[in-house]
Image 1: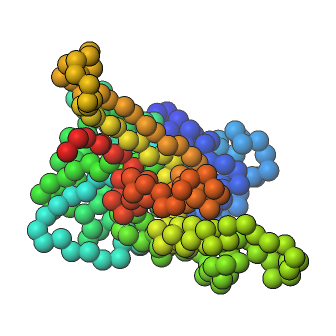
Image 2: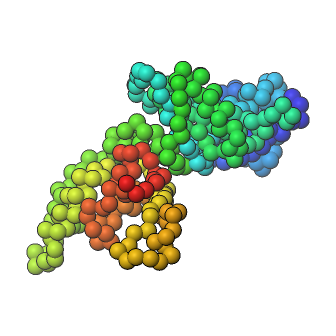
Length: 311
């Protein structure tokens, strides 16, 4: 094993948290159980890494083996990356459950003058028999056409389009494009009655306590549940809206009235869990119910980038 490959192994293993070290190494399945037992995992991490690199060298590990380990690490820490969604088309398109049919691809970009940079790879997650691929965002925008061409050829599609959908949460993106968020994200059945759930009523509550606007609160909860359902929402961190409109006024003249270029405005909603935050606005009394369709249509339209123009 040359020094470059040994350093790649060292850096890859070094970034694995100790709490996940054994799990990831066993998933990798390159080092035997007996070999792992020879490593003292109670010593300093740098020493553990050195022992593991020596075992990799003993097994004559290759660059592909190191790349495989890096993919497994990325699968465990997929939320550390920002993922874009690409949709491919062909006729006809066949679908099937994509839960266990994902293919992870790791791409280290290089040129005819430079070796591939193993420390800044791009990742592609493709679900077979579906027209969707998810890619980690890359700073090398010039390589996107090459990536798109490779995906269309490899998947036997005719065209590929980047969707207006992006998030750190790969599982949520998958749930949105496959319309699975009302199934895979549902972790409990709603057994609480609408009246109790919406108003926070306790069956042992003092009967002398009177809730104001009870009917309105029930309406808000009912409308919210009709729009968002009673299941957890897919996790997105933001929604962005770009507005382009011509200035309109009943008054004649003025600088803006003579402006040919449209007025442009950018509005961005951000939250650690945007859809759950939007779902809670009306019940909390912060917004009227129902919310604007521009906010509630995000999962159904499969996008969190919007462009709004005059009709």
